[in-house]
Length: 635
Image (cartoon, rainbow, N blue to C red; front, top):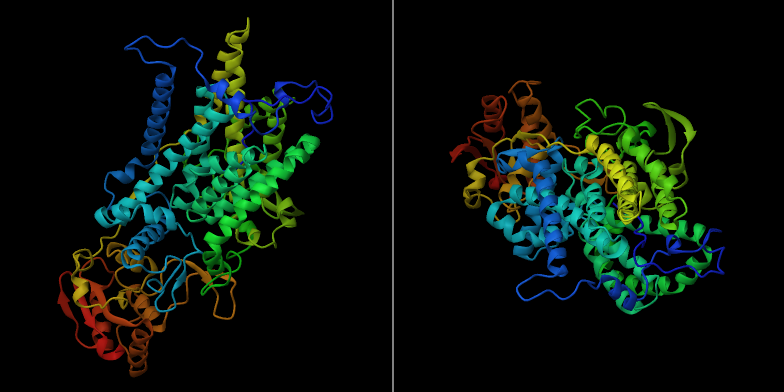
């Protein structure tokens, strides 16, 4: 996800007399600072050296573009390989192992399209969890993807938009890293391709494709990290600061969590470089801070209101439900294989990760041995040392507040215990710190591949390059992804999809699906592009109006609990006067215009209809639902 992008191509040689800055080794190209050389040298390095092509023949630039296009197509093919089972029926299937997460994110895309179409607040709404509402900033946000995909959502539906986003996230992240690596970090486009491939298709992003598009949407991260590096050169501080500000604002409205991890990765980069190259790091500090100040002004202006909403707005929360270690990785997970990898399987990650989405490590023994070998081989290079330090520190953070022995957690404090109570850190899912490690490894693979490619013209270099290529292939093959599973979804009634609900529910008022279930509410609302409000839902919010501690969802209203109990066979259909009074008070609370029971698909359908008739009077058949008009009780 985030990591330093060390410059290893356009190198600034360390002065011969500056042995301390060079770490005590002989100065030379391997001791580059993190930024490229001056623009003139950079342009010269990029310029083709071949003679001008004859008329009718395409030159080196055309060949480079063809390679770029081929890389993009391969990344897209890989993304379709991972998500392909969902594309077989976007409206009828749920992709991956976390259907509730997919349902929530489909609703987020549907609400974004609704907010754009109706000019409503993109950061808070009462259309979910009516009438209290939810704070969208304290959940996953995704305002920018939702805005961009609004035409797609309105034309093809939220389920199609979700599948498109989760697919393009993988392809876009891979190509973004390839682009930055091939332009600024390495000469070999093959090495850059391998680095991008790992950053996008390592277990981290594949596992998060089980319902977390806000985590896999990392296509701006490489450009943000590189722009931070460029700022440290001090050449165009104002321009670079403004460009970085624009990128940060965009990422802010894609995923605030990924932006935080990106910033943390950049901080780790700076501290590691300070440790290995103190003199050069201090020299670069002034332009870096000046540029970041410009960035901060721009970001503050653009993000002031959503930041207030995030930390002080209605329904904001503090922290994440549960203790940090619930969502932490185990030390042994780094040598295991992920559920959706060639060498993995349904049980391979059980006990080593919180769930099927949080498998951000799982590199396997082969890759871990390769990474250790590369760190030893290129240990004289400062960028490699920086990558190693950042990768190790972020991996340690991902293991939570205490060390583990096997799958058992001990009482021995681990590094994350030092920061667990700090603002923002207390809201991060701990396993996701390993996303930083993943990119550190991806960039390291690109650098190592570039070194091997550079040796091809040496007497023994061709053999070394071939052996290295075989070693990389052998290390990566076991962790290559297999397609995500897909399952059928409960059909949304035609009453909703066909728009008949509009004749019975006024704009901004609530339609209550029965049973009152958070996910049923979201699926119905998504199908209607958030055209009506729904009770409950699937979200993170505060415990109460006076306690902002984070929790999942809300406690159900008494009538919702009653209907759920009936549907599960836990009570009979008899209702008393007190329950009738409560039922009518609950629809007033929800600001409901109608209560709807699907004609098919609901468990114990006839019992539910009997209870609803007793609570609200006889219902009537409308399209494929039974409908109770509750406006006489709520208006």
